[in-house]
Length: 141
Length: 141
DNA sequence: TCCAAAGTTTACGTTTACGTAAAGGTGAAA
DNA sequence: TTTCACCTTTACGTAAACGTAAACTTTGGA
Image (cartoon, rainbow over all chains, first blue to last red; front, side):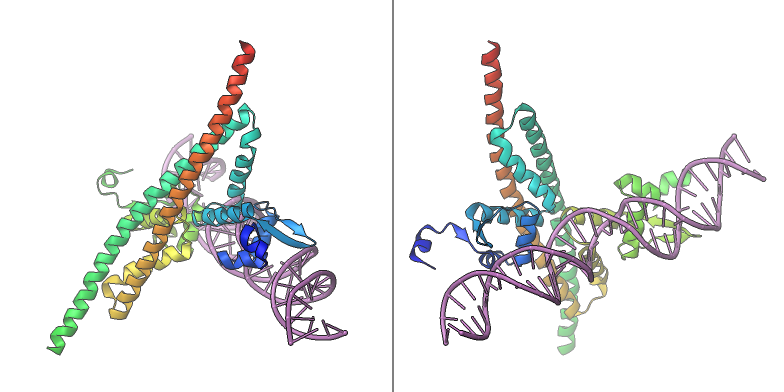
């Protein structure tokens, strides 16, 4: 790494990113092919900007939330066109945003419910375990 | 529906469930094939119990949270063996439960971040829209 | 100068979660 | 009795998200 790079590092290599996010280079190239990131080139080698890195991060976050790559790309595209959009475009975007918001609210509910269920299972499991241990104890006593 | 059914309804037909959850019968049969539900039969026709219905609900909830069918089945199986498990089994279950808990916590963080991002996009979008409308206004004035 | 590491493209393979059609059984109503 | 709606099994098809292998170029070191 050059000194210049240490100071004003703005670009990344493909394996660098793959290590940072623990994904394969294949995955990164696939995301590019799907239009999620747009690295420039140095010769034939891909150069990733900070924007690419952020988008990669957002894509992975979206995945954890069950967003498809197409959905994530849609959001990226909408974001990109926000500044140049006309009235119809902008209203469309606002609509989609409220849809996403509703999805997220649903997910929050889901998570809360699953968490309480996990609590029940854990209690049940802990009690069963306690019983087993008690039996052991009384045997050894 | 018979009177008896109205009072102590404990079973469901496949299309009844498919309508309630807005999924196809194919999906329900597929979940059975994957071991997620175990309806009894009346002749060759499937009869679903309340337990089946609940599991179907939980399966769909899991899907919304990005759980694979295999993962959901694993949780079901763990739950079923909780009452008869030995010490190792129970500790295994407790471990997996804490893993799931960690995943859910991660998801909560993800959701919060995406929500704040949606807020930013929405603001940006709203401002752009206001500008468009202001231009219209000044033109018509 | 020559090799190994890392990059590239192309393309076929794989898993998950169903869709979709084909071909047939079943019971109630007309 | 025939028709219709609903049920069944079997089985091939499909979209998404990569995995994996082949074959090739480029480049920084020994």
